[in-house]
Length: 99
Image (cartoon, rainbow, N blue to C red; front, side, top):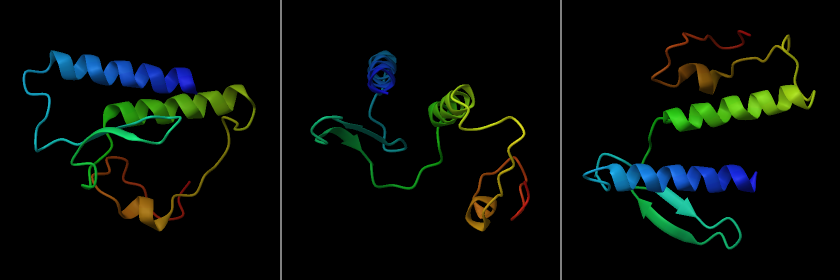
């Protein structure tokens, strides 16, 4: 897990260094030291934002890790909560209690 966090940190800094305007009021970012829990950098960290593609990729990473460790199976059914179904922007058109 520590390797993954280090990789994410590297990706963040590379993307920031390549950007012409790395700190924009429209974006949010936070970097926290894993060991000390110290906030190293933050911009609009308390604003409500939709998950970026990296968050979706990390979700897939965790799902595939659980599949590999047999903590989850391909035919497992999970119910959609009312909270998840009501969130936007949802492009999945999920309904509460669907699976």
